[in-house]
Length: 288
Image (cartoon, rainbow, N blue to C red; front, side):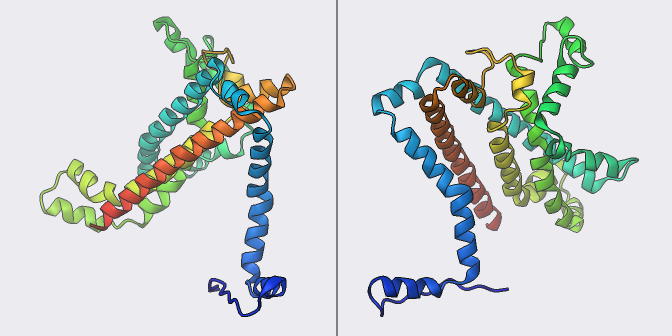
């Protein structure tokens, strides 16, 4: 159903003209803006208004406190590294699912969506058990002095776990639509498999990979349930910003929690904007 943009005219001045123009807006536009206002815009505005009740000096003091800066580092750097790692390995997994047939393929493919359906607390408990010093994986690396659970590395493992499906499910449909004849033509012209991937497959796939990375990064930044269990939640070590917000709320420091939340929102928007600019650059490169 094609819906054209609403056209406004100024032939009727005042409130009557405004109401007349409002009545001309298609019902799909009305539902869209009402839903976005209730679910997205109003909560953000309410959080901003709550934060602005804090004096600027106090706002700056809370936002730049040493413990807050440490949590920003743990949260955003770890989430970005996890998202980039999934950008590489998630693309590889999607490639294997699309290009190869193997036993239990459908079962393994379905298991990729487990982080979507699994409660995050259960995921955190499972990861903490497996990666602890007595766990199946943790016990293998413990003799080398590597500790995963209850460290920042464990936070990274949890973020990687919950953000992996975003990359795989974003890249997989695009790979399925790509024609294999293009690769075969490149091979016939003498290109190696690496050259074919870099010059033929990667350019149209790059914006899609960035989309999956952006979604995974946004999911990892807001993760709470699994990270709060697998981390020791020690300040200046592996304490993430969502847990710090929860701790402030437990202390009835609503202003402090709101300020940290605003900073998380702003940094996330800036980083997602940067990823979107990279996506635009990738599409422009693809059209050349």
